[in-house]
Structure formats: structure tokens, C-alpha cells
Length: 90
Image: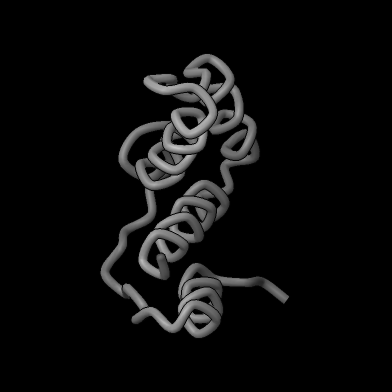
């Protein structure tokens, strides 16, 4: 069974009580706008523990490259949308 972006988004939205965003486009790049929400949340967590800190940019690039290494267009996007729905919930 293949889980699509919309199925994952609907599941996260239902769990969070947030509306489903059907207009988000997937991309194949390992970094950039398709991971903007994930980067923001990781930066916010780093800032929580040390004021002014940002998440390690080298490790973030390594992480996103790893998620995209099998040309899986859905994994980076689904992770970003999971963080987006967490932000929408809170």
C-alpha cells in the first residue's frame, strides 16, 4: 500500500483538527521551500534550548539529502507538511 501525500495530510489534519491543504506542490530538491516548515520547527527547538541558536545547517542538509536519496518526492514533503500541521494545531 502506497501512502500518498493527501492521505498523510488528511490523517494529520484529522488528528490535529486542522483543515487539509490540497494546494501544496511536491518538489524533488533536497532543500529549499519544501522543507521550510521542518527547518523552522528545528530552528525554534534549537532556540528554545539556547537563545539565538539555529539548527545545525550542515546536519540539516545531510538529513534532507538522506530523505531525498532514493528520488522519493513524497518523504521530504510529507515531513514538512507534518511539521506544518503541528504548527497549525498549536
